[in-house]
Amino acid sequence: METALTNQRVHVKALSARRFQPFAFAMVFLLLTACERSAPVSDAAAEQEVNYLRAKKLYEQQDFPASAEFYKKTLSVNPDFAKAHLELGLLSDDKLGDPIAAVYHYRRYLELRPDSEKRQLVEDFVERAKLSLAAKLPQSPVVDPGELTRLQNEKVALLQENAMLRSRVAELEKAATMAAAAIAETPTASVVSTPAPASVVTPSPAATMVMAAAPVTAFAEPSPGEAVRAHTYVVQKGDTLQSLALRYYGTRSAWEKIYQANRSGLPSKDQLKVGQQLVIP
Image (cartoon, rainbow, N blue to C red; front, side, top):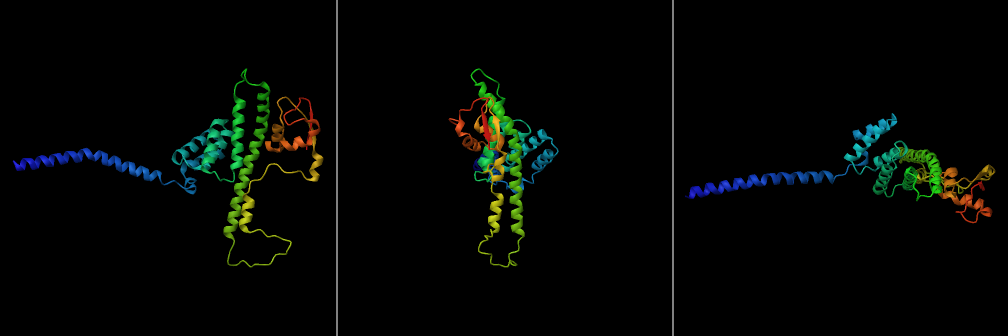
């Protein structure tokens, strides 16, 4: 009798172990998955990922749809890879004509890099993509035709601005890379301090790198030699001071320069008349 009870207890324990075994495997799998997700991949490692390298190569070959697909594969592996989000946003905006995808990836970049030196540029990209999307919407009876005309005019100017902004981003990255490389190659032990003249301020290497990496503003006050290049412009339907500033200076924030040059004929910044002549300084 005692032997039978012992055999029954062993049988019950074996059944319990078999029932518990799948749950144990599931717990181990979840723990391993959590460990993998808690270890984000660095940008340096992500830039060596095969899908990202393939995306860059296809972009250079101007196969833009295929390049976008490999960028998406890159982000499926490394969803927090900020640089890939920015590059896919620019690709969607500039080459694929997909402003919705562009806005999404621009915003993801800003979420991942809130302190980026390119923040103002990327915010401009977002606004440009929104305008591009609005210009593609079909005309509706409740939409002001003049507003649609204005959006179309701004779209033309934005296409020109896009090339300029992409060039500025590339210049900033190149300048920052060169400055960092110069600092890394500068020998610290062999530097001989020489007193500089009192009237000369010698910037430190760190200050040089900051100045090289600082965003370049698209609008600056004209020099005396540039003042003679001012010309007149005849206002067209849908024009605004912001759209004219974007066309001539590359940024909407320069509208006040045109307004100040024409205050005698403009009661306010919003009262442009078709056929009116404006001085573009």
